[in-house]
Amino acid sequence: MRDTSANTTRLWAEVVGPEQVITDSSSLRTAETGTFATSHRIPAIVRPANRAEVQECLRIANRLGTPVYPISSGKNWGYGSRVPAADGCVLLDLGRMNRIVDFSEELGYVTVEPGVTQAQLYAFLQERGSALWMDSTGASPQCSLIGNAVERGFGHTPYGDHFAHSCGLEVVLPEGDVVETGFARFALAKAAPLYRWGVGPSLDGLFSQSNFGIVTRMTLWLMPAPEYFQAYYFRTESPEGLTALVDALRPLRMNGTIRSASHIANDYKVLSALQQYPWQETEGQTPLRGPLMEQFRRELKIGAWNGSGALYGTRAQVKEARRLLRRALKGKASKLEFLDDRKLQWASRFAKLYERISGWNLTRMLAVLKPVYGLMKGIPTDHPLFSTYWRKRTAPPEAMDPDRDGCGLLWCSPVAPNDGLHAQRLTGLATELVLRHGFEPAISLTAVTDRTLACIISLAYDRDMPGEDERAMACYHDLLESLGGNGYYSYRLSIGSMSAMSQPGAYTDLLRTIKQTLDPNGILAPGRYVPEDTGKADMRSQSGAAGRSA
Image (spheres, rainbow, N blue to C red):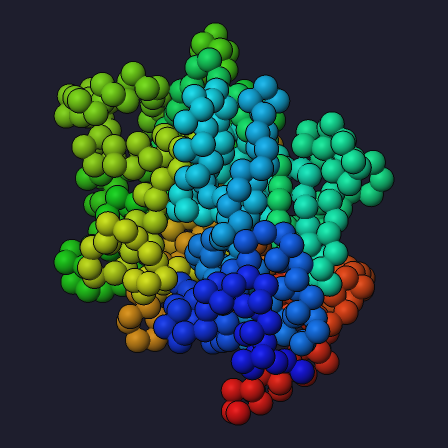
């Protein structure tokens, strides 16, 4: 039976210190707020400082039957923010665990704790004058590196698949034991931060998108800075042009000409990065579509589909890759532009002249191009957060916080084969469905691997508008059902859909067996990706209801 009494608080405080156990209502309500409607309550926030404190916190949770939910930075925007996947979980905030444990310039790796953020690692590399680049997501610079990696997030460089470029996990199991993966389990193993498989069964994947343990340390591989870097941007005016673009780029991705996680975004995605919703032009009507959307495309010189990526290597390699890219996109992209540091500086100084020469409206587009250009070099930025304020009627504050500011955001993340017909079908289904629900389908496609496209469908709305939460959630679940019914399943889920996406069968049975073995009391992140045992969930729900009524 769940115990959230003063005795529980005292036990947590004895481990982490009284000031690191937070129970005031204001802080708890803030932690319970995400970018979509949530109802799960958090009785306390506990902030351990090291692995030993995490272990003891889990032992207390087991003794008292109190479920805990670990977070790193808590900026899991669009998927749940800090909110647990089940009601009544104590939030185990790992943000104080922010040490960079190990680093090698020669072998290109860094070992970090879960509180280490993108901004912290970038500053660390800059201070040392390192010739290594990190890979950054488009999320906040204050997002956790480990938090994103274990969610299998991705970025922009050749190291964009974050979990694929990690190894040597240190994991605290639900009952407090510690396991290290790969060669890290052996004393003095020299290849522990370098060779992810070790020997015997590989366990790393068990602790990605699961509730089997808490990752308290991980090694991430860093990319050697290339001799030369050049970004490219292209667009096509036709919505049907996506098929040809994807099919033209795929061979270049598969043969290594394009090594980065290149992106293709639709007009809604680009427009939301440039400005907020045009309330005046639409006279307050939603969604934005038809002739007005075409007018914005013409004025801003953006395409129905807009691509970006980067070429990395020696100057000779980039020159040859540039030639192959031009040849592949000939007749398929209406514009193909290349930017390097020198050209970007020139364009910034002479934006008007550059616009007349190239046809690109750089006066406005530079506001988007510069942050994206930086991301391709591993430079974190908070600029993409601007688009979460798309439907808000007030300008974003300087310090953006989508949770605090009532920004509605849901991300649906289906994966498709890296094939033009699949890309066209998936995005066509999503576009029609989202517009029917009254929202703008801001869609991007990313070639995270040679053979697959990760599609991110952004539902951005204003949570302060009555009824919008309900409509957005209905749209999100409709997307999951419709796209899944057509074979396009999401690689990442929001806290409200993890149980809905589980299916009976041997796979789910195996997950439950592992969970029961590692976490017999069911205290670690119940409901997170691994389907709960129905009996335990009911008992916890009844216990939580009794605790609240008392």
